[in-house]
Image 1 (cartoon, rainbow, N blue to C red):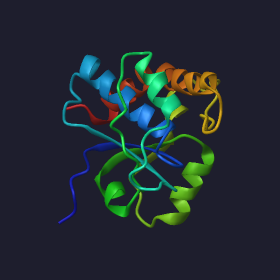
Image 2 (image 1 turned 135 degrees about the horizontal axis):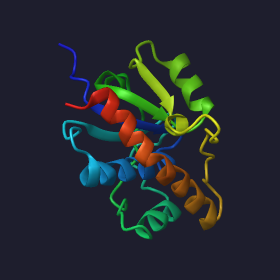
Image 3 (image 1 turned 120 degrees about the vertical axis):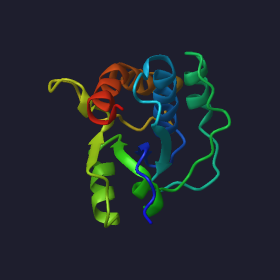
Image 4 (image 1 turned 90 degrees about the vertical axis):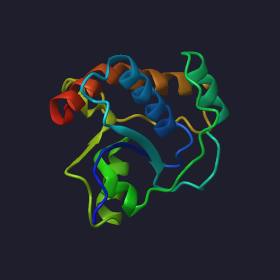
Length: 161
């Protein structure tokens, strides 16, 4: 029997910077304003993750600055089972969506960039801050924070109970 599709999955490359931040941001948004979405689970994975790596120190610090703790995060490599549980998968860049389409036979019906929920004129990709300075991590975080209200609305329209 197939696993229930109940998870919003964020995907990036190593699962140490962008996707763990997105996971924490959505969890916090759901806790505050997730009416009708309490059945959703949130996960993050990497397409080239070394399983068990901690979140990058700049990611941890950037999230702590807004009151979210991702220090316990450990990276996970995306698996077919993760996709089987996913209602929707959000990648960070077009290359993530391309890699998903090429590597996996079965994808959820909805696979988008995280910022695809924003108006058409908004930039779409979220560049990888890995190896950059702290400001790049804050910019990365802020580009996701900007999308959270629209992402919540998207989830509410599609998956509310």
